[in-house]
Image 1 (cartoon, rainbow, N blue to C red):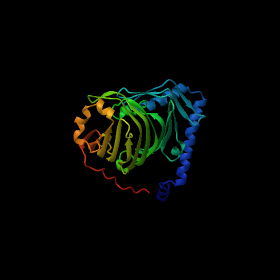
Image 2: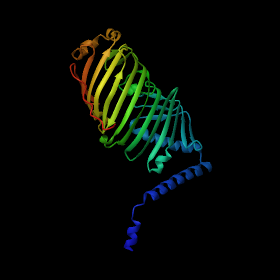
Image 3: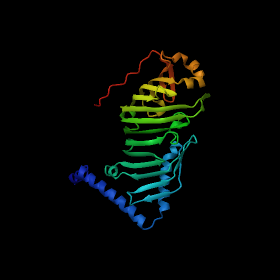
Image 4: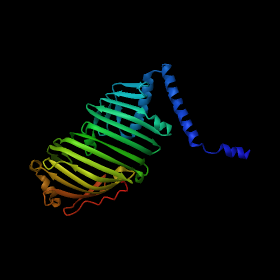
Length: 320
């Protein structure tokens, strides 16, 4: 009898585990179709899904509203929101045209939770794909002509107001509870960035334009390595060149900075904002730009003039 018990306690083989996952996936689809065809009100189903979605957004202070919901089975089990609006905790409103979300059945077969999200706003398109188990994630994104003003990215970056287009892609995988396990890359291109005339931290800033920019970041072992951060050409109102790295912490605001930033301004901006040179004179370089070393944490950066400094060394990568 003891031998029988031991035999029963043996772990399932990979083949049996796969068959079990396929069976569970088939059962899920069958139940979904069954309850739909017995005319369970669609409004009841979509309201239930909306409740789960809102519960996931609540911890971040985000409220989701829409002008219509639809659950489609024959298009590959898709949840569709018409004209959804995201209201952020700082009262920023992100108004979208269309949002579609659906599960990733390949991830389900692997015993993971996964999905695909497609967002449209005018000509802009955002595609998100991801899967995970527990706090382990494997996610990627694609952006096409996304307005950084309308999507709230400028507001998130420091309460700025303006517009601009960003396109690019990225991928991140690892465990959120262990930043050192995170790896990936981010590649973005910016065009036609316009910053409105605005008051920031008590200073009245003039309107500024940036024609183009590139952001190339590698994520290796929980570090964000600034491979290529260049915003603005020499003829633009502002130019930014950043090097170095950021060591991620479980609390993002506590992530450690090891950066060097070089800023340049056009004559138009200097004339409109004459206090620039008096505020930043100690950081002025020989070519008329301003160089700073940024240490401390993301939530409390500590800038110090770095006129004669050099770019922080970027750790060598093991990737070929």
